[in-house]
Length: 556
Image (cartoon, rainbow, N blue to C red; front, top):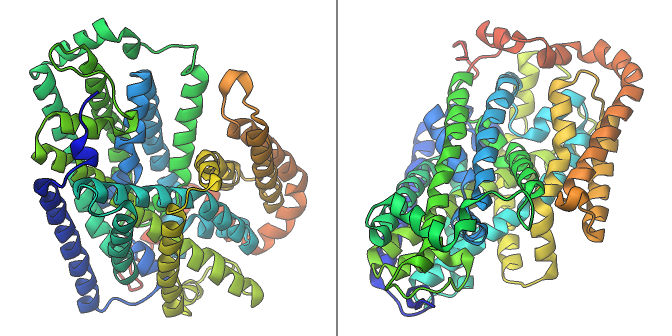
């Protein structure tokens, strides 16, 4: 087994310096964004804090989505999965990420114009508008937070782990997590999404450059730059790694489960809805979605990195037997090269990927708490009307501006509380953590019928949304705990999702006539905005709702 001293041993100055340069750049970019915001004297509203008033170019939106999609766990957990299961362990990531990009393209067609017209910021905002129900908004927010918090915890732990690695253990994982948390929560609180966008666009470039460079360097270092030689070595020593079995531990049930689990999770992840709403125009959001779909091919990079690790066993004279842990395979390969510079490159781009997921997740979840829970409860208590109940521009603007500073302040406090909660949970080895890991993706996808039905089915009702979601969540928890995985290994969340969908459709059909007889009298304009193709874009182009609250036409 290889010596892992760079991973768990003595301090090496070069990786520490490389990480320091990256952190200095992050501090500079975040401070610059905060200062620019103050100089421009931007109006303080939740919409501005959370979506930058929908003014971001497509290139920036694409980079934000990429660094959210491909977190630090891509280079630990996913690499480890491919090292363990071969190419079969990575192919579904390509399909899922390409599918997610395509899905985002079509979702954006519906979401961005509505978000622009009604000044929406979150998924729950959109569903409140569709169902004219603030209680549905709170339910969605609760599910999103409960099942998304785990990713915040895991990526924050990754930050601490990398700090510990590059310091040779001088900085503990706990202290490292605290340092990373302090850095991130500061610019999220005071800079909002503009700071997050500035930092994450840079982090995405670091991640892309670092991962591609690492793949090339490993193939050159261990296989003389000949990728065909690498595959030949794998074919001779581990031929099963190049096959896609239809039975066994990784079979078709696993492919289907992971493809759709990843696809649905990416579609519902709160940061991705926030990022759709960042775009300055529908055209720019479309561009970012197309870039996201093509980024699915980038998964080939981490698959090739993993395959390079599998082939090490067959290299004569190397003396390699196996990885200490498949999840640390990339780090062990970096150590095996004997290059501190390369080890620094790997740890830096992994840190950048993790940071990009932490800050966007923290930003989005803090906004969900402020906008979709605390503010929503206040509106319920005060019996305020739902979004879209009044269609005139003044009413829309009043909703956004009436308690603007308070909502932003709550979002900032929520970011601090969430980060402290994630840090505290991350320091504990609780069985609950393992349960949360297993439940996260399968739990959040129980919102799929409610969301897709609301967007694309005219007969969706709040009653169907409540019933389907509750049945789906309860069924999932029961199935998971009794180990029910039909068809020889399909994840428990999918039969729960099937029951969820059936109940949603049946209850919606049973309640649609009564519900819409009243709904269409009051909210026909909302119904038309969702289902009359091109109506909202026409409204925007006619200056009914403009780009930034003045008389300039919206770009669509």
